[in-house]
Every structure is written in structure tokens, then in C-alpha cells.
Length: 67
Image (tube, rainbow, N blue to C red; front, side, top):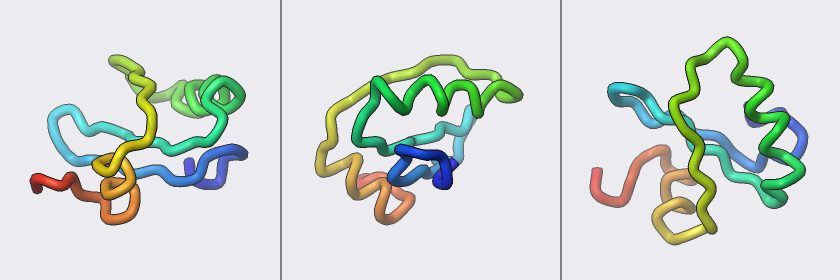
């Protein structure tokens, strides 16, 4: 996923179900390609959020602040 054009970073958060966090700069341009790349995976939802301290920490460490 990280090698996709427009994707800055991607982190899988283990759990049931696991969650994929993808950081992009231009969501409108990048999101359609990210969704197409997940065509063999069951996508239960998509949430678009602005960057925050929590999201940056997750992308840098692969863990949430409260883990």
C-alpha cells in the first residue's frame, strides 16, 4: 500500500477486525486508488479524518498513544 502513488504511509492496527490506517496528502485524488487496491479485502467502512497528534503517532510507531 505504501508504494501507491499519493500514499505517505500505511499501518495495519491488529484487532478484530484489523484496521488499516493510510496517510495521504490529497484524499480526493488518492482514495479511489486505495479502495481499488483493497478489492480482495472486505471493507467495512471508510473514515476520512484530518491529521492529528494521535494519527501522526500511529503512522510513526504503528501504535496508538494509549497502547
